[in-house]
Length: 420
Image (cartoon, rainbow, N blue to C red):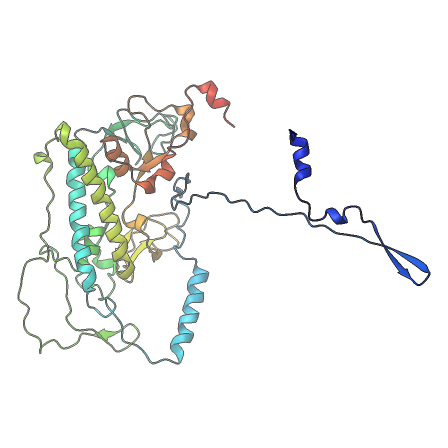
């Protein structure tokens, strides 16, 4: 019996070029003379196709934290201005030889009927979120700095020297933590309430006579939510354009009178602070799950509404205006507002402008405080999400990239210095 060693096994493999391995020249015989012609053979290297298992995920493993713009910087446009101009030129070329089409809702003054239930869901989700946050604050500690706008979710405040408030140099950037409220978690962004969203722009002289309400509520009202305290004009016929910026309302005298009725869906109401009761131990997890669902439902619905109903934001300050064009109130106090005479630099708003997420540091272990030297190893999450997670809710997939859950945190400072 003959055994084959590993070195001899390579000799047993078939070689398709074995017949040409010893051929260095080609001999041709022509008559009685022999002609020797050198022969060159080029053998290309074989490429082996190896199959590899690839796992794709829409959410990246680790993502950078949201950029914090200074007060001297202007917000970037959601779409670059060059692309906006290019799209406008292409749109004008297409409309040049085509007849003018009638405007669709909501530009013609009518409501988008398919978005009316979404507006009610966003309004009720906001009320549910506020009421649940008031209850969760009774069991989950949240701290707010008394000098700046930073907050922290956890038993004790973080030790990072990131305070930029008044007299921060004297305190060497350390925060002075106090108890936080719902307004610290959900930033109150207000906007002017418009009786007619297609009417004239609000002048500077009328800035104090027009009520201001939460911007999300104003967006819901313009999308179809009926609130008796904030009446708004509802058209039943499309407007008639008589110019580029001028229009008249269509005659609605032939239509039957409007019968006043209740809202399409029952509207929830905020619970007063004096009536808030701390949840029981077996209700905390369910309350946290409901709060997280309300947060996602409000943001998802607001994103849908913003696709049809325009929302503007100032590029220099957090001012929000729900409408096609911003107001004319000269109350911008951002960097170099004197050069603009206090006027806002309006541009298209994104969802984070309407509903700021307020990112906070993620606490991996509630029983252990954060270490100042290990700051680069910690992640961040929106304040509402971090609050619900510490209350026992399941972590959503879309927030794992900024929380750095797969990053190993060193146990000692000596181990942290060894990390490259």
